[in-house]
Image (cartoon, rainbow, N blue to C red; front, top):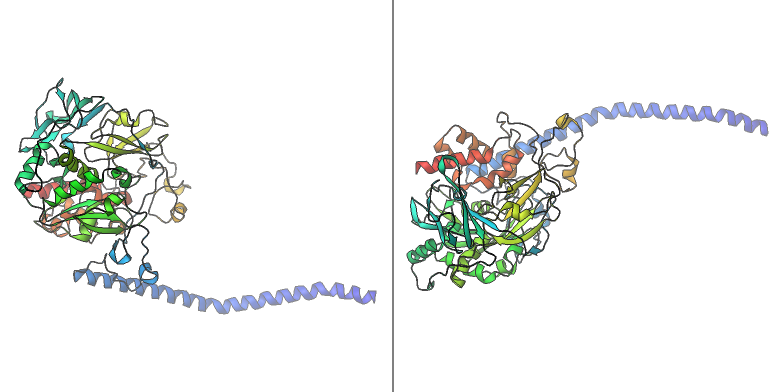
Length: 546
């Protein structure tokens, strides 16, 4: 018996080896048989996919030729997620049918958002009004004050020689300590050293209920609040001689690290509503309020506002831009005028009629990963950058930006917050050379490219100023169109501006855009083109033709 077992034990490995070789032979034979079919299947899938892509392109082209808004209507052979599963609206009282869903855009999630508390003890002592903040204003306005003069909040500092009725007033009371000049003797800024307790110039009482539009406009010009209203196209100070077809206000900001306007407007519901009542007197059309349908419930100040038409917007940046909202609600045609007002500017207008003073108080978000404590601070319009930041820096190798990182302006620490900005961004200087560039493994960074794994998992990023490449020839692609949720071809528009084709610029929708609307196009541009500067060049050319 033992001998038989031993013989079986000796033969068994040979049997198993033979069986294994036979199985591998069968598998190889099967693989060689299956491979042609697999290749045919893959080819069929690729061809079918190409047919679907080409078909969808033709459908969209035909829809655009027929004048259909492809952003509001799904002209695709594939159903949208909202059509399959039903649209999800996370905030507010809107239903899916009330919401404008934007399918394009890109959120840049940076570290360093301001904490949800407001510091009311910020030690800001210097403030400035800067004529260069106003597009189209004469570079040398008529200055009404001298160094050493004492002023009250609301006192006139200067006015435009071409439009002397519009007054530019001091945001605080105190002493005029500097009148700084720039190139060609232009007025760069008028600086006031603020009093510890702000004193206001009392304004004459005004009967809003029984006034004419002309009387209201005159009062607003003399009181200093008129420069807070801007006009599209061109983003200039509103021309009171022209009546706007509508006035638009966006109640949320979708830019990187943007301030939460719900925090900014908290406790100012009366001033905000009074401002809306004033704006309704300035247009025979509607006052439109853009509300955020994406994340959280908007402030009751916005939801309960009366005398306005509310619109819910859902999408990634630039969904919060008022220009995007105008495009989807009531687009600007040639010869038309639309006015826009910021949330805090509305409150400033309302304060004038409720309290009889020019109240330029501002809540400003101090943001960025290079700060020890990003936060909100209470201050006044045109605050000094260094005073706002104080000793809050982690290091000194940083860049200060008035506004957001996409469309804000670089500032020095001794300079001042721009007139329409309620955000300071502080980011690291990106002046370190990257060996091998994109060939080497990279840390997480904001990009629309799917080659970065961090983009797939929703990371937040620490930004710096490195552009990761120099300027180069304009490469024609669809990158701009991927992130601009408007029925406009921005790349073709940029090319028409570069060749100064006025008729084509108008036909491609230049009147609907300002710099902040194309800031994301500049961010994603492979060619590193200064898209915002190019657009402003085109707008200036069109403005000069009028």
